[in-house]
Length: 436
Figure 1 (cartoon, one colour):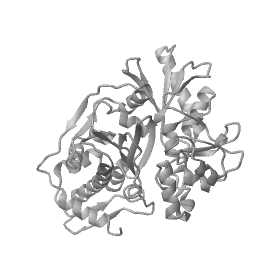
Figure 2: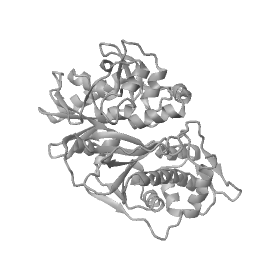
Figure 3: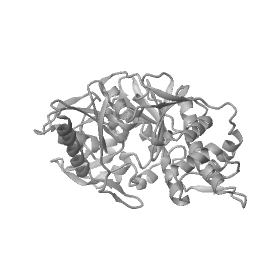
Figure 4: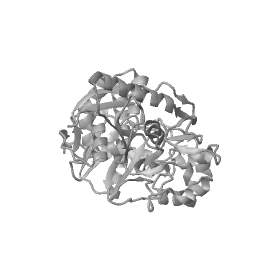
């Protein structure tokens, strides 16, 4: 969790971060503690308030998508905060017919996957007294006393109807829920006064991390946004919620005439972190390998975490192909890097069929690696715009919540016209799609 403090003119003053320590996980379960998150949030806010002598403060909230927090009627947590990575919901998802899954997807714009809270809720123990919350609405309630949720996060719940922008009646019926068991829906600029006596502030409900990342680049036209964290996602803001059953792209409401379209993957920089652990290497060594681009025919499918887009199969495993006695440490590491980037390229190509864009804005710590960044640019074949501002994603949260347009500074990379990955990419696709 991160708290960034900005001046009224949007200059970054300070940042406070807290790692999650209360984590419950096994092969299917992945939960965090909403109590720990809220405690760290208030502790960090009070720390900044004291350090800078703040009398006036606005809190703009941004949270990850797809979380589920069951609550009592008094808004007390029942169990842990279920994250997108939790795979409960697989039983209901796999038992649903193709027609049922497609109908659910077309009504809500949320892909048919265990990340979708609708399927998680079908496998959780619910009753008429259970309230259905998420990280955003629980935090907003504790700060303001109002149980409300922004429609942009609700859109990723699998429970919001794309046409009505209200809770989807058919989904609620299938779950045995009434609308009163879910938070009141509001827009991303909705705000309320903090009820904490030691923390007077206005609290703006804000949006989700994916939407915030896209609004970093709101001053550019015809740009899709690639976020590379542990996972990766490529997204674009469009005027209509274009859904495609073949790609299972998400289509999430942001605000009037603005929808987030995109494709999420389980495998981003986590693939590089895995390579570091297995090969005892550093990011600097991986960047040197990206610079050297060693010759080799090795192929790596990067599904170390199963996969969402482009495969939508949690059972997938990573695989190596074409290893031989001439394979070197460097050529194998290069194959891992290429596998990660080719996987991104598949999602970029699919998004290009759903929306028009001529460049990519990119956020993520790995983009600080110069040779890695250029290799990615050459493989994707698009100009890349990389913000020079630290914590740019937070500024995106302010931009969308305040309906402001910021002029940002970028490091711009152009694809090298002499780089040719067609043959290598074709061999990668042959292995990646061999079971399709």
